[in-house]
Amino acid sequence: MRVGTSHFVSFTKACDYYRDYGFEDRTPAELEAFVRDKMEDAEIYIGKPEVPVGGRLVLIDRGRRYGIEE
Image (tube, rainbow, N blue to C red; front, side, top):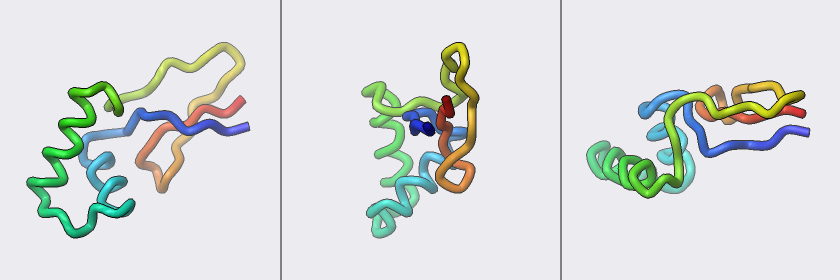
């Protein structure tokens, strides 16, 4: 089973992810501010998540976000 996480490979990849999910009409500055707010609110993270024993880290969403496979 594969489970998505709220961890992104990079800030740029997080912006790309949200642009493709209904935020394409925002300016780059607005999109960056939106992603920064999500980071400040601990809704998303940049970097690899902890992987439980028996899990395997994978890239999902066109290589922008981390998932964990069991």
